[in-house]
Amino acid sequence: STLNFETLNVQSGTWTLTSVDTAGSVGWYTSLAEVGGKPAISYTDQTNGDLKYARNSAPDGSGTWTLSSVDSVESVGQFTSLAVVDGKPAISYRDLTNGDLKYARNSAADGSGTWTLSSVDTDGNVGLYTSLAVVDGNPANCRHEKTIYALKYARNSAADGSGAWAISSVDTDGIVGGYTSLPVVGGHPAISYFDFSTSDLYYARNSAADGMGVWTLSSV
Image (cartoon, rainbow, N blue to C red):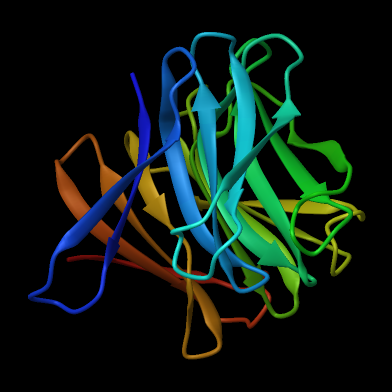
């Protein structure tokens, strides 16, 4: 299989397709972001069970893709989410082997440096459907915890993610937290997610800018 990249000049224009990586079964759980003014992708190399990162040499993605391995210890890299954290690319992802939620951040603004790996949550079977964002200046993520079928939220105490992660529950009613998306809405973190129990779309928003307040839940 092949990981492809698509660009669109205007809404009614033509899609330009390019191959990013063709070595083995690659391109699972992709996440696309602009890193240092150029497109970058985090994804899973399913053949080797690795988390990988690719960045293009051109602002529109028409240049050469540079590929690198982020984490290759055991089977890792599920449900990747790529964001720029404190000026450098960072990825939240699931460690399939250990059932953990992990966080990786590069030492260079373009992702060409060294990746520092750390665990966000190791309590139970966690890290599914993770979404990474910068919340009130610090990295935060949401995800599904399979052990208790809950939606969880975590935010780091440091701008680069090197501090401690404060973890809280967003929704624990039923089997919730699928296919999450975490942006900042009106200055406060918000999450859209799927409720497997009811097959409904839900929206949650926190009362505090850092996400440490009360979560208000509503069905969409």
